[in-house]
Length: 302
Ligand SMILES: C[C@](O)(CO)[C@H](O)COP(=O)(O)OP(=O)(O)OC[C@H]1O[C@@H](n2ccc(N)nc2=O)[C@H](O)[C@@H]1O
Ligand SMILES: Nc1ncnc2c1ncn2[C@@H]1O[C@H](COP(=O)(O)OP(=O)(O)OP(=O)(O)O)[C@@H](O)[C@H]1O
Image (cartoon, rainbow, N blue to C red):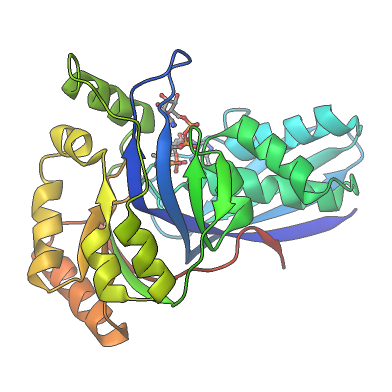
């Protein structure tokens, strides 16, 4: 039996511009993703029967709910790869989950990207990066970025990924809430809040790109932004308090990651990141605090 193991990072959105809802129900995005060193691991073991199965080992939050049937997005990724390549083998997937579930850090998307790479290796199906990226886009808006990693601009509904010029390594602190938020519900709340108003087409702010080009953490902190903030706060008003605690600890910037509820804070260095983490943990505003560095590589065989 052939086995392949892939490590895959979480993402944060340094900016998330959201435009008016499209006819297909998705929103046009202008985002900059950064991959951070909070990793899930997906192991694929090829089998001779035609079963595609998954087990999930929760490393961080044992109470999180992750499906272990065909609803698991890693299983969907394996089916898509098999249907595309015509291979007849099966696979046992084993996920080691560290990325918060339904936290806005693309945990499911990360597992889907990892499953594509791991199954492609275990089955010997030999698809190249461009073909894997095409399959990734069919699985979810965030999935192509998790193959890519690093820093990247996201357009379309998030699935069109292009590199950005960036310098520097950044210290992040993530405040993880006890229960997740549904991405679909947050976009629906965005639509409800904007009903009757003209939502502009989104753009990536120039000052954010300049901060990344210069590797300037202070300027980056000032230019973090997220158009889903009001929608996430409307569903979870207590997140405003979480953002305040990080800012009182002098974070260089604070933002809700993607559709939330995870709040992320930019620190000046490792000591500062520890101070922010301690302030958040001490205030009891979140279930878990994670210190992370970015950017890091996307889904890779180990
Ligand atoms: C919030 C973000 O994480 C920011 O990067 C992403 O936009 C969400 O990406 P994702 O979880 O991969 O999302 P998908 O699985 O493609 O879509 C889940 C749901 O989110 C909404 N959705 C998602 C992406 C987008 N550009 N517009 C949307 O309105 C749709 O209701 C969709 O049914
Ligand atoms: N492999 C998986 N890992 C986590 N959740 C999964 C997985 N497969 C399916 N799901 C389901 O998807 C839902 C969303 O989980 P996920 O962790 O991807 O959210 P998220 O990080 O907020 O996503 P995003 O940031 O891409 O919007 C979960 O509630 C869970 O039921």
